[in-house]
Image (cartoon, rainbow, N blue to C red; front, top):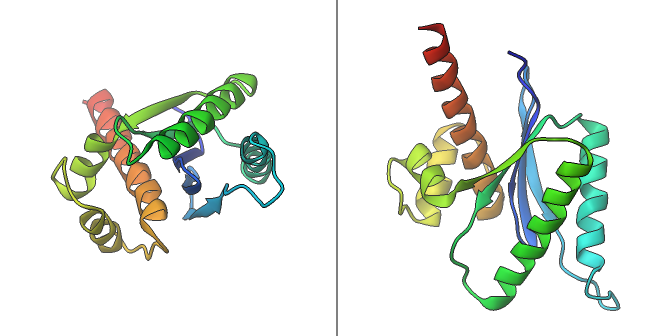
Length: 161
């Protein structure tokens, strides 16, 4: 099986991201899609797509995983998430890149052992894996990547058996 380069995303105005290449280190960070002063309503989404294009040029993305959020803190956050998710899924379809959401509880359970762990618990778990995330958005993206790679390892172990 080919191990594709995986892009993990915690979608939001401050999007956390992490990339795992088949061989080598995990690169990660956050990217702000906060509208600028004179931006129209759709500019954050155009900037998001442009950013995805840049990431894809730097590292041929083979697969995208995103944190699947069911409940949001507020209406604005839900709208931004929905808008980014719409752009992401269209972008993935356009580039024929497989994508899927992973429920927040699944990610938390995978890295902390508890499906309703706090932000602090997730950050601490990611730090135990040797990462120093700048904020909870980056920590969530790293946690998602760790969760996805743990599941992939389990699947390949089952295939070998």
